[in-house]
Image (tube, rainbow, N blue to C red):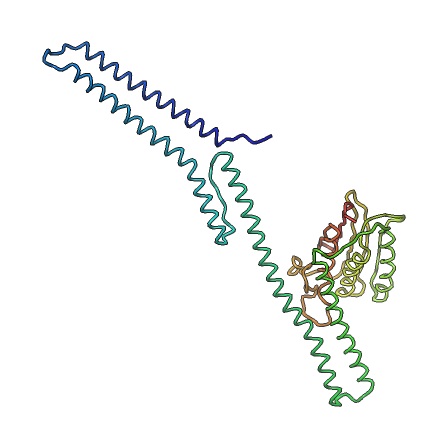
Amino acid sequence: MKSPNRLQHLLIITYIYFFLTISIIAAFSLFVLNEQILNYFAQTVQENQDKEQIFYKMLMKTLLLFLSLLTIAVYIFGKWTASSLTTPLRSIAHGIREIARGQYNKRLNFKASFELAQIQDDFNAMAKRLEQMEKEKQRLEENKQRMLVNLSHDLKTPITSIKGYIEAMELGLINEEERRQRILRLISDKAELVSALIDDIFELSKLDSPNYPFKLQTADIAEFMRELAAEYYEVFKEKKFLFQFDIPEGEINFSFNATWLYRAVSNILSNALKYNPSGTIVQLKLFTKEKGIEIHIQDDGVGIPQAIKENIFEAFVRGDQSRKSDGGTGLGLAIAKQVIEKHGGEITLTTDDETSFILSLPKNAES
């Protein structure tokens, strides 16, 4: 059903009131004229007085009274009608100029008819979206600058170390074979870190691309989770962690990208292993929900600092808040977030008594 044209109704009602007012003024003027005519004929008029001239004077006075009242009525109704239209239009024009100058916090606030009120609501909604887009643009620009600085640091630090070790070996400063082997292992570790960083940047850039093919296939996600848990069980046991998992028995057929989901879950498990001390309890759980499935990854370790909690899923943010060259690439959670969003789901973090990542995947993901 279409909304009523309230602006048109308002104008029609205004003109009706105007017509009624004019009618009242005319009736009042005719009443005055009639009274004057009756008084004229009721009076004794001198013989030398021009009756016709007196009559026209009375008529002229009545006409002037009618025109005066009509002028006042036209002015009042004209001003009222113009004000009801021009005031909102003036506010809209001013708001558009403010938006054009980049003042996206501008909002309209006036009382008007239905149509103009709709324009006001749409304008305010548009301004709000533009303001949010501008804030997001600034945030992305700041993240870009920070990412470039961090990337430069994370590449420069291991490369500088590699260069220093090689120069020392070339100058003959490292003669003992045992020391040479230890330096070679350090060089290999630094080179591996640089390679991992480049691989993560490449994978993150692929996930950021809207044209990147992200195919989903229906498979048994319970079996997928069991295999992943079996893979990490020995790793956690070796580091003296207590690894617990709760995965439903039987098949749970679900549409997902096994390669990328493995990367997302393993990144979070690897972080739990990297940043927590021995004795930490790590839990991996799979739940079926009405709208899809949830993967919970929890630990009772050192937790995540409040200062980085809001930005934990951004690139190069690390749980220890340090810029250590051996602290990982800082892209693991950023990749995990992109993977889950590519599935049409979301990833959330809670840090009450435990650090808990919840990966929610919907059933209606397109395959």
